[in-house]
Length: 132
Image (cartoon, rainbow, N blue to C red; front, top):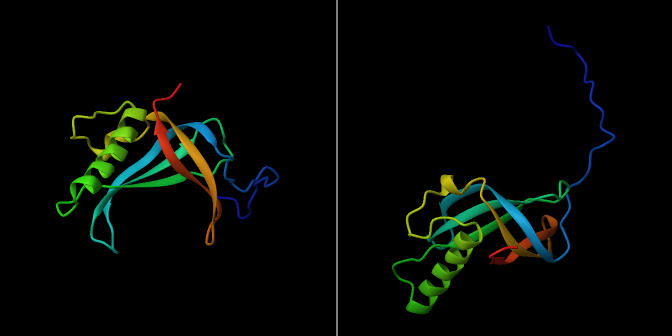
């Protein structure tokens, strides 16, 4: 038998917030390969949480995967970004990793704060670093 009323204390509810610019320890909550509707290119989309900051908004981070039509410079830039991400989380850099295996990994990143017209203040990853 269920009760017919809510018995919830809402006094501790808070609005998640962006964090000030700085270096943070982050954990991967999800990692998925998707295709861009705009360009058709594939990308790795990760959702990160800032650890030890329970009121922080989660961070979505996109890394484009190298594409066959990329010139050498663009392919290198995309590979370097993914390599820095993998190294920051101490993940396999052999070139063959399942995004599901990334979930739960902990690493370090420099986050910046910026205004988004739709979502308000958000954090964005400026750089992944080989942490402390």
